[in-house]
Image (tube, rainbow, N blue to C red; front, side, top):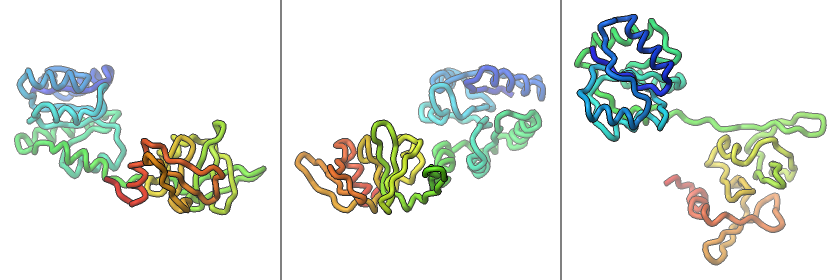
Length: 254
């Protein structure tokens, strides 16, 4: 059996090689490659191996991009540190996987499975696999804890009108008109909040849809928002965000 190891961590690659050899010394490791670029070049200039051990994260990107550049007919055993749901995706496609850190017994089972399947092991539908790995519904922040005097207050996201930054401090404006400081940047909040509920209109404001009471159109596509609780000078949508903001207002994702 001629195999190929594609793994960007040298120690991990060497360890995998030793484990494979311990299972069957006759298995030949044709090469150990570290990147997408290196793997594409090797696969274009060499016969296809019988089996490929493929890490998901390589030094220059996801290994899925290899398949966009070269046709691979070899069965693949993925090595991955992805979470349990992603592993279920591998199972759905009947693809073998090894969860890092690799266990010798699991490696041996994977090799036995490959040998039992032989040529019947279907080719990998990489695009479908990638889709399966990302259908998991992302969970978003539902509440925040705020320090109010000597007490800790829990605030529901639905009670928040908008977030804003002032002098390097992030504040939360509530529909009740209360305000609290928050020990998180707006950049971080964008990652944690449901994008269907909040939109980063400019560098200073991350607004919730119910907080917008009016939208004024100015020349050159400028948009000014009236918010509740009010912001005396109003809030302008950054010019580079106007198109996406209009889609957000319309409930469109395209």
